[in-house]
Image 1: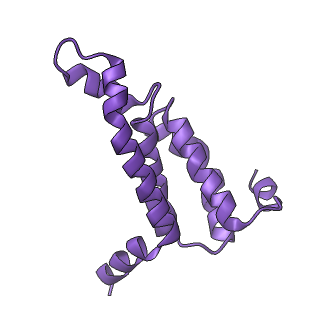
Image 2 (image 1 turned 180 degrees about the horizontal axis):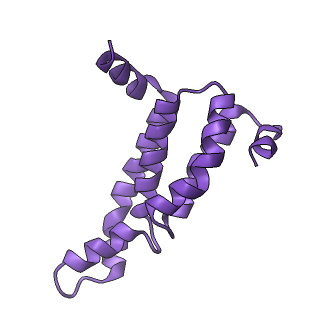
Length: 128
């Protein structure tokens, strides 16, 4: 699988972005652990081959998992919200309430993707 991904005629950044969007999509239907078990054995060697920072990729990956967990139709966090919401709250209400958070999560993904220093600089300062 790694060789197939590495053999694609697409830029490295586009491949990583597609990986992150796949994680968001999977998060709509699955929990974090199965997503990690399925994707990381393929994604980590690919990111390493591209020479990209693994801390940066891990931050992207975790935000993507969280985004998927709050995304309709089956994001796990949505059902948790429904369970603690006042009586009479519908799933439609929960979906509408989640939209601003999902949009901000996508903004966070874009910021981390295009400005890796947001993640790598603080981590680098920790290990000085």
